Image (cartoon, rainbow, N blue to C red; front, side):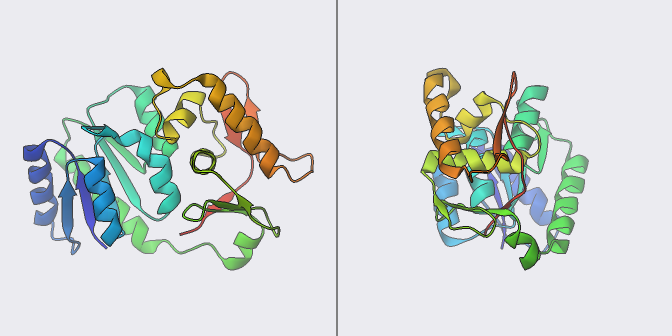
Length: 233
């Protein structure tokens, strides 16, 4: 277990790593300056906490939140970015971040956030087995969605990303733009009709035949997950 810092500003990244190490939390600290670097680090280790910048040279860190949350459900994620709009903060929290801090960062606030998150992660326990049996379960590495006490449903990569985003935000609705971003796509370059097709296909695929749908349309806001989905991992 370790703490990962992903930020492309070398001086700031080094300062942040040095500051975390000065806290003597007992967790090794590693860093990278890109999403490719993050992907490479994740091959060898599953971190306890990820501190992630949104604006990176090879992509938008925000677009990775849903898949990171699905792949590593007990990963603590702190977004640290210069994006100060409330809409960006809400999007980051819905998509999977535990905390959202804006630059320039107040180090006292950052320390309190980091220690609070570490304390919470150390106290968390996995859901009881009997609870999982009565909930939907998403296995993101296998891209499988398991209805309660029913066979698994195979998902595409995009479908899995959308389910992960909806499950994390539940019961709050997730906007169409956020669902597009959850797939690693840019809303500006994405044909909205593709999302309509994806959602229609997904809802038909996971339909249980009952009147209760897992995914519902929230008019004017997007889509929402109506049941608890336990994320495996």
